[in-house]
Amino acid sequence: MNSQFGKCYNQGFKYFTRVIWCVVSGLLFWRTYEHYRTGLEYVYLHEILGTWLCLARGSAAVLNLNCAVVLLPMCHTLVWLLNRVVRRVTVNTRWLKMETKSFHIFIGYVILLTTGVHVAAHVVNINSFCENFHEEFLEVNPFSYKPKIYSIVFGTVTGVTGILMTLILLMIFLTSLKVVRRRCFNTFWYSHRIFVVFYLLFVFHGFRGPLRKQINVDKHIPGCHRNRIDETMVIITSNTTDNSSIYISNETCSEMPTFVPIGCHTWLWVGIPVLIYICDVVCRIFRRRHSAEISDVRHICDDIIEVSFYNSDLKPRPGQYVFVNCNQISTIEWHPFSVVQVPTICNNNIFKLWIKSSGDWTDQFVEKTKGTKSGSCCEDPMQRYPTVQIDGPYSSSMENILKYKFALCIAGGVGITPFLSHILYLAEDRGKNKKIKLKCLHLIFAGRNEDILQSSFETIQKSCEKVNGRVDIDVKLFYTGKLTKNKNAVTSAKIQNGRPQLGQIFKNMSAKTTFANKRCTVGVFACGPVAMCTDVARYCNTYSTLHTRYAFHKESF
Image (tube, rainbow, N blue to C red):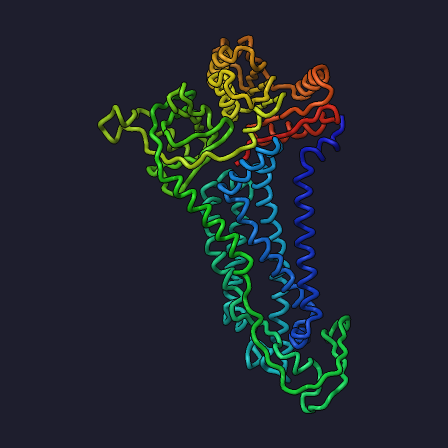
């Protein structure tokens, strides 16, 4: 067992991208820092602000870069297109779904950290503007008179927009914490929509700011004698407190220095990414124009329903997911659900979703389906199924199951849905798709609800009969809830009590692959509670060797 090898194999790309991004951001900070430290046009401004000017501008450049890129991982259509392209080349596309979300979160932390540096630097700069008023050249100051702190903070576009952006960023960060996101998802969702206001403020933040640069250094070298027109040798220090940058010039001063605001170039950074995001939103709006008709609703248990839809335009593949919207509940909320059954000719282009009552939106949706009927057979609008819109399908790492020769699928609760879609697809495909490489599928399903276990077992059992041995499907079901009087489901030959022993399962899998092949890669797919997925990832790292590599995938929205 080599956990380090497994970590490098499964998480190497994640840490590699993080390191590369930190290096890029660090180089950008250093380049901007040096530009403002050594640039002749900033010498007089540097005399007022010192090193804090360089810190503020360096962090501003890093903020421009990260605020531009943070939108791209959330462009679902872009990620879907990239997934389709990469899937034609290699099976290793799990990072496209798993890493886009985590990379978005990582950049968010970089933005938060850099904002702290930027705000701290400007707090010192504001005080320096008030204390170190440049009496010799008034134009380099933000005001023609010695200002007060509140004049700079509340009397400039930069100060007002900076305060508002900081407050918005703190609101987005605090509502994005896992504790808040799980308990108050709507608060998290709505607060993230304020990013539109943040970007509007971000673009105008540097407009006519207090920082000014000299534009005539060719005719007035900073530090030369202003009253003499002859050639003069001067020594120029760019920082009155830190004599690290010294310029020696032998030039003629022909005029007084001229200063202009540094200017705002944020739009150059965020322009293209924002345009891409807007195009992505437009594509999603266009795809959401088509509504899907609910043809049937089946209650699997008290809090889980199976919803059947008919939409001839929707062609999801096994493992993909869609976003669902119900105008009768909310016009702007879209929630992701894995497809349980993909539409085919055999099932009359019907696709199915399992929806679990686990929040405000899902609670209301489940409630609205009780005692209702399909619109085609019910004249009373109050008794019809709610109208829904579907956005998708979108790619997921669960799509790769059919591309592995060996697949180990581990599900918890309603997380069985992407695996059911593959088993149902294999049953209806009947060997027509020659691109399927899957030869052996091991499914481990643990749940504390007897009804969902029994329903899943019946579906899998019927599908396995249609597969006819083309794929070796081994299913193990585990009941993790309290024992009840309904012992038929719990004591079934296929349903065991207690939690699955993942360590033993991986040992058996390793032994099987060792006997069958000299070297192979096992696709491990986990969908369920966070704790379960974390344990599966740890076992993948622990049991991965040069002979048997466990490629970890998990369902993530």
